Structure formats: C-alpha cells, structure tokens
Image 1 (cartoon, rainbow, N blue to C red):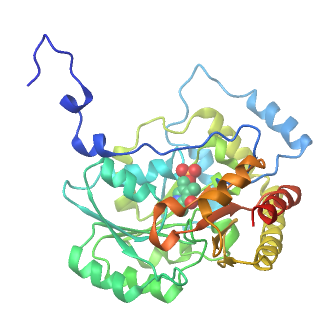
Image 2: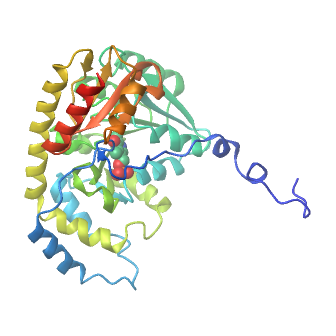
Image 3: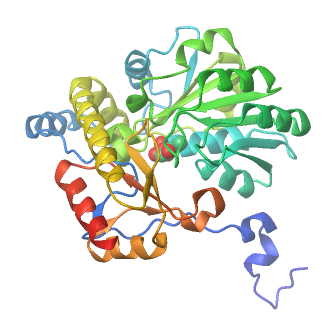
Length: 362
Ligand SMILES: *Cc1c(COP(=O)(O)O)cnc(C)c1O
C-alpha cells in the first residue's frame, strides 16, 4: 500500500514483468569499426546529399506530420511490390510495429517464434506480460524444424507467430515449404519479418492476397536508412485497420517522411550498394572459411554468423574490440549460439580490418 510518508519505489508501482526485464543494451561504438548492427556502411553520394538538403527545405517543423503518410506509403508500395489488396501500417522502425501488434492482443495470449531469433519478439512480449514460446531451430544448421514447430502450435495455440526471413542472428533463410507448413498450421496471425529482404532475393509478399492471416513486415534500416527509423507492415485491411487504432497518430516524423520518400525515388543507389555488399559478403565468407577453427554459417543477409571451435568467443570478441573492431558477441545467449560471433558486412577496408584483427586473435 502507498502511504504519503514513504516515497513510492518502482516495485510499488510497476508490473513485475517490467521490473524483471533487462533493457536492450547498445554498446558504445565510438572510434570503432562498427560491424555489430547490420547497418549499411555506405554514405550517400555527395550530389544526392545536396539534393536531399534542398528537399528538406520544404519541411515544416512547426506543423505535425501527415498522420497517414500518404505519399510515403505510395512510394513504399511501389518499391516493395505490395499487392493492391493489402493495406500498410507504418512504424518508427519495425520494432514499433512488433510492439503495436502485441499491444493489441488479448491479455494471456501466446506469442511464438523459433529460437534463436530476433530478441525483440520475446522482449516486447515479456514487457507486456504475454507468454512467449520459443521453439528451438535445428542446432546443426539453424533450419526451421517444421515438425516441432507445428507440434508446439497445436499445443500452445499462439495468437501470433513471428518468423524472421532470413533469420537474425543466424542469417539463414528458412525453407519455403517449412514456412508454408507453419502458415497452414497456425490458428492466428503469422508475421513474416523480412528485414533483410533486399539481400535475400526471397519473399512472401506476393502471397498476401492468398492468406488473410499473413502479415509481412519490412524495414528500411538494413537497406541503409537505420537513422530514419522507418518500418512497415503489409496485410489484409481487416487486420491493419485494427492495429491502426493502437498506433500513435504521429509516429512517423516529417523529416523521416520526406527523407524516406526521397531515398525511395533513388532506389538505384541502394540497389548498387546491396549488390556490392552481397559480393563482399561472399568474399568475406570465403575468407572466414579459410581460417583454422572457424565454422561459418551460410548467410542470405548482410551479416555472417560464425563459431570459434578452438578459442573462447568472449576472448576473441574482446581482442577484436581492443583492435578497434566491434562485432556482436552471441555467446552469452547460450547453447545453440555458444562460441558464436556475428559480423556485419562493411566496406572492403572495414572487412579487411576485421579479418586482420581476427587472424591476430586466433
Ligand atoms: C533489425 C531487425 C529489425 C528491426 O528493425 P528496425 O526497423 O530498425 O526497428 C526487425 N527484425 C529483424 C529480424 C531485424 O534483424
């Protein structure tokens, strides 16, 4: 009970599931070669920057942004080949879209995803007091175990299933037939998170028209606009209109709206960057495979997961960092990722820096 004489502590007022959470840790990357967060390493060409700054002159910071993002939605539809029958919901990054979906669920609902996967599905579920069921991926290759997943679906009847396609942090693309089995078996919504669509060359977007419980989520972050914070979800209007009620009215600010629309009109710049990153990813993969005691997993995204077979991942991570290279240490996440690190594909010179430091560390 709260009395007027004692000041309330967090434990007096906040839900236990919030108190139990750890906040999402973002390490300081100052001065480091930043290969930890799947950012596109390439800046915009100088003439494009000048044009962009001109376009930004039209921004009106004193006015609220367009709450419906009409122009931006049109540009997103065209750039992503969203079927006409689907509606769009925009988020301040796709992280916010995950939160919007989960905020709208009934209390006590179950959320399901394979694991290891993108941690925000579990984190946001936990913050909202929803039950989260993680179904292990096959340990040897991180493939989706459709049999085990469908058994878990039958047992837990999840309101929402999240499938990252390709998966983060493993980098692999689940077999299409396995995803279709999950889609068939799920009683509720299936959100296919296509954050790495630009790199994967595979998508479920065209299947939206056939399945009203399917939602496709994408983001501009990994394509090269991480700083703008823009993600979107495409799906049947009957679902999107419900989630729209939970979305805050001005969640996409005017600078993001103008800048993202501008960028989408210059898709060739990004297509060239993606092509470069893909060929550099394959080169980096090959180089990693030549190193002794390194197990490299196939990637369909702009990052590579690898396991150290003869060294401690914590030590190698620390050595890389002291040599100025920041990657992601996944060892702490436990078993299927033990001794694993994840590196984002950078520029050729950043990749060389990383390889040089890794060779030293081994
Ligand atoms: C990075 C990532 C996101 C989040 O992207 P934002 O749009 O930047 O919030 C979502 N899903 C997956 C699988 C990711 O890797």
